[in-house]
Length: 233
Length: 233
DNA sequence: CAAATTAATATGTATGCACATAATAACACT
DNA sequence: AGTGTTATTATGTGCATACATATTAATTTG
Image (cartoon, rainbow over all chains, first blue to last red; front, side, top):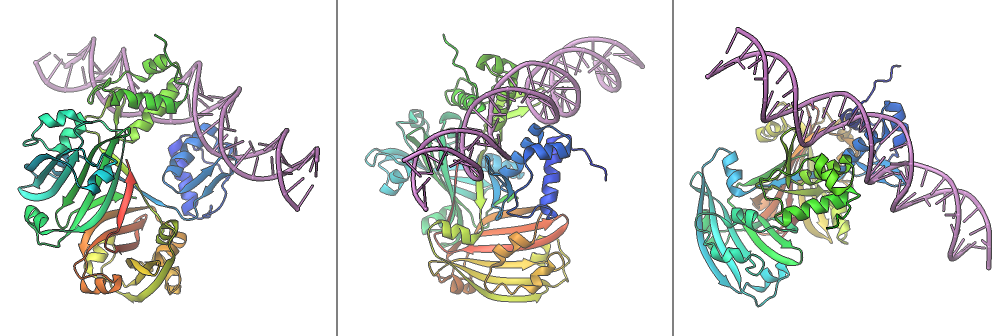
């Protein structure tokens, strides 16, 4: 029996995945420790560590100090979703991007908005509504609130030609945020904007970002019927 | 001017993020190379490399050999979505999990199903439909196709007490898969199952997995109205 | 001057070693 | 038995060094 050598972390990774896939290591099993694997694979422990870390990041392995590494019993599928600027998203499909600002005003947001942003309930915010088009058909409706205290430059922008979606990326840094996906039924107003039937099922993205404690922006994106978000496993 | 020391990769990472956030490094900018940064930070290049790699994985930095590392001009937000077993998902919310198998039969799937799976169009498959409940209310409707050639053991399962969602995880390994999220309008049949109104907007997950070339399973999960999938940025 | 070759450079990774850290197991003590 | 302390152990990480690799820049060649 010849021991093939696994000299780089990628090959160690594929071998580890092969063993799990081939049921040589059963879900729930404790696998050999890094030192032993390094010995077996004929490489340094660092290399094994790199490989195992990579596999653990996908959820297939569970690692805990001292406890060791085990094959995840119920592997949680982890899908990486890339949310690009809408213009880029459309252009990458080879479609023509279009943009129309609908409204822009400064008002005190409803409580559900200020609440979601952890913002003062009585402070006026910039409210921008706009439509993104792909090949001249409605693609996504953007309903956005911007905190003018955190992003004062936004007050000087009318968002008529450049979308808030894009402008904010280069003008309003954030430290963290939340994103949620849901399905909502089109109101009559939304249906008119997106040129679809009332009560159409719309794919919806809600996103709030903060800069430290300060709320930067909250956006709801309503995508036209049929829209779908893909990822690989 | 005292140079604070960054002795571990996490602190280097936060410092890098701080500089980007503070606009010391502008989007599009080429940042100093690893050797220089290591010198400046008073650590090894390996440490800087680890930190920059981590930041690049989030999409905030773009790295290319020889070309160097630059701040992403239009950072693509990357959200990691964890898709767990539905039972786990419900139990983690502190709700009671319930399960009901609706139908199970072996039929030749419609063309859109076999097509999505890259499977032979005339081969019969196992078709299982089931309902997942949270606190006795409908939570998700699972409509699944399983290739019995790839997963022969599935033929011996009736899926009356254990869901295919869960059974497959421990019985059918896969090498890769695709997942897509969308919003669909409830058909009258789906509405009856999920106890919601017809044409309700349902959050939908479509998922296909393969084992090498062989299609393992395709599932469509329809979640009840109001369901939402969250992630952090 | 264009094409092909070669050099230069920044990131990518492997290695041996050392020590840090978290979690468990073993043990001593009351 | 119950509790607190002390090894023990597997992963986590840092470092110096060396070499690999991709890509660009410089240079030679036809």
